[in-house]
Length: 438
Ligand SMILES: [Zn+2]
Image (cartoon, rainbow, N blue to C red; front, side, top):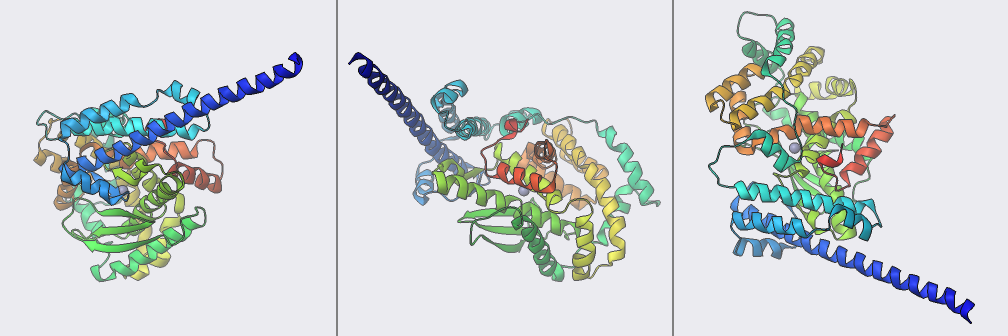
């Protein structure tokens, strides 16, 4: 009897231990789900104080209504966000109680980090205290961007000067040269449709998107950005192109990939289907702009351009398809591409100008003058660049530093284009944040 009882007892004890572990797992999941819901409500409440804060929301409409009726003050939002952060299971505890997937641990880390950024943003909202660029990058975007002296860009300026010789200031020569590549306003729709079609076709060859995914394209004015993707849920986006300043030919592929495929539209559609629809993880139904998620969004959207058009493929497509559609001379494309490659190297100068400007080391006029020198660009484009910094602060790092982080992560241990696409697609459909990329 004893011999038969013992295994039965062992089974029963094991079952009871498993049952207890599973009850604990469920309790952890329930509490994470509860925190996730409160996180969404807090983000929506913050959006009531700052209309640019909520980039996308497609969860229950009544949550937005409730947030609008009686939004807590920013200081209360910050305090609640910190409390919620403290209630989340600690990293070790999470591994012990919810070992079913590493995904659960990433989820908890995602919530913890996003809540921290919300607390930081809400806690500072409306404050007149001096800003600190690096503190903002850490608190809002979960990263420490590199620093570079502005003088380190002088050799690139010298190369540009050699490429575009002349007597006037370099920014005038560069701007006059680039103006030849403006897309005539009437040709914008044809050029953009062809560009987005190509970005979409190249993306769909590697990434399965939800059936019926779609977007609408609009041309707008008076905005601090050059393009924007508004994700509306159910795999639909509104993509807007700002025509305050003429749009140059190389921006068609850039914006098509960045805003659409495999950029923001793709990222949001994958998050919605993978997490909101398949798992009921409501935190992904809201996207707070000033948060670590934006580094992944902007970094992957910019890396997506070279993933979809590697090497000289972008130049080739522009020469063969977009220049003729825009009524531009394809034989001039190569030289324009060389100039644009050099100006792209100067993008980190913008981070430095933003750092000095936000830290109060230079004033607005000096920021515009430096943007003009290190663009190098016209006064109106330099002004638009500073207007962006006024609106979005340290957000500027998400484009170039975000791209560098995503590129390093994707290209680590991948040896073919297909492997890179698969790793990229997995990154988009994951709760990974900047500190998870290292
Ligand atoms: Zn973007």
